[in-house]
Length: 130
Image 1 (cartoon, rainbow, N blue to C red):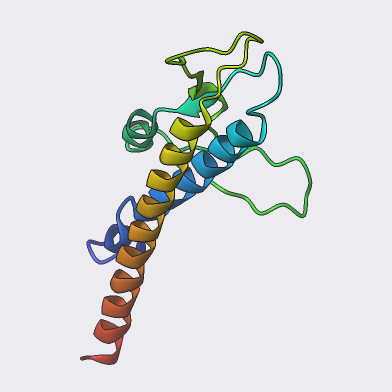
Image 2: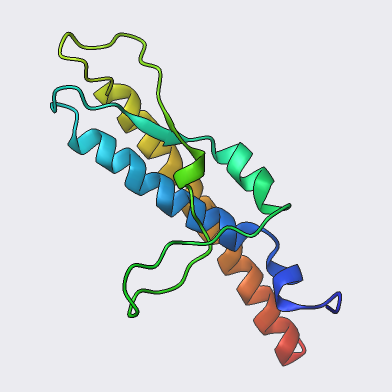
């Protein structure tokens, strides 16, 4: 692959955005089940999964032929969260912590999006000779 290839220009940011979107789904699921008895909060170790991206290609499971094919499969990387104070009914979701994790993840997703947007503007300018 050439040094000026499309993937080299964008780096790992597209994979990071997909991973952040997947983490947002996991955190939203935790929040949705905050009152479900015996529900165990789950999360992924974002840094560990992203570090693994440089060594392996992550594939997203496709259950229907019209689904878009992605590159993230976090099922093996999905872990249970250890609660600071578990509920009496066995639920391990701490709503306030989950909301802070979700907000942090959303801010980082938006930052990656803005970074990629700047990369695309730069590539577009380079193609125009600006």
